[in-house]
Image (cartoon, rainbow, N blue to C red; front, side, top):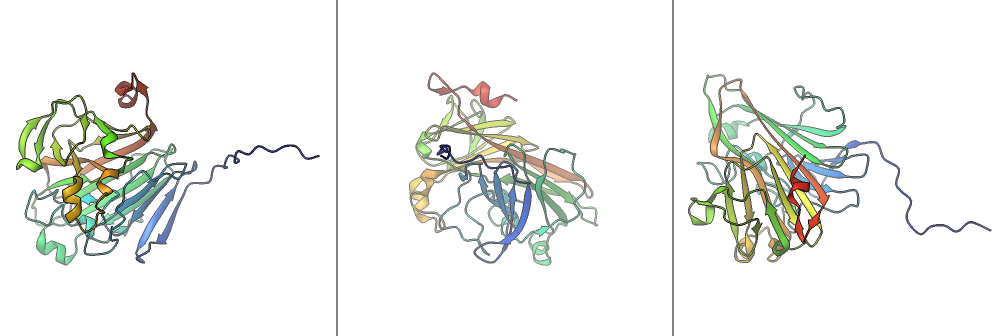
Length: 324
């Protein structure tokens, strides 16, 4: 007689980490990263944009609108758009600059990174200005982006921007990783790590205020630029019992945005009710632009973790999440 078998599925064997080059529904190329324990990420060559980050259970951790268009000239609504060389309307270029609606190339020979031998799964992309780009922003640059999946599933984006002008001119830019987190219900989400900070309120003509709350909660439209934000920020989703931990380096500011109901209705590439399931928390350089002389390079790094929330008297214990 055969032995009784357990009904639980077998534990999957670790797969070797991989990076696959494939095509999305619009026929444009994308890269699919998979790490050994089953986490994955997808990067579109259009915009150099991460549009998926899934945990080892296959849960999607980034929000992408059901109405997003994955082709020019519009940027992709969701994932992690890259705002460069201008954040928002902080200059004369189109909103959030042009990097997010250009085609990037795979960088086959990137300059060496500091070695982290644990990270086996990564992709390198590069953006250089076209003749048309130079007409609207007359500066030569190399923007190298590495998207990596760490062995535990953390998603790491590292940007390196170099001034390659040959005429001796410096240039200045603002920047953001416009990260859209997937949340169960925006009214059940809180953000910790930005308490007591000064912020510029984009809904009040960039007037400066000081954050008063113990944590940031959401009851209406929010569009704030927190200044000199700490290197770690936690986004706590009570309903999913999930906490995102965002770590940043070289990116002093943090933008928090949710369009809420009225603005969602007039955004063609966002469903009327989708604002409930997204929150943007964006490490950024906004208040004090970066200036590079020819030959100089700037680096900005973001690392995202998704962990089960820890509770203490019904509240998150921030020490557990924001330490380490």
